[in-house]
Length: 83
Image 1 (tube, rainbow, N blue to C red):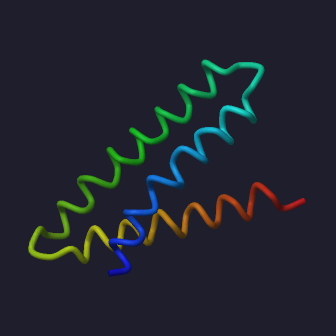
Image 2 (tube, helix red, strand yellow):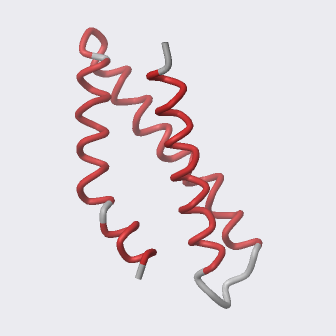
């Protein structure tokens, strides 16, 4: 159930994050868009083999990667707003 909520909320989160990123990089909108899109692909390219390496018998590896990504996002938010 929690995994469903985490993955289901991406439809609300991703457009908001993209919008905020575009607003922050207003002077160089193309570069901001490239960094956002490229970052998504890089993190996906890192996470996919890690999930596969830990087995495909259950959803636990995927849930663990979602949790790690969430924790990384929270830490990034805390670091970026500190100061």
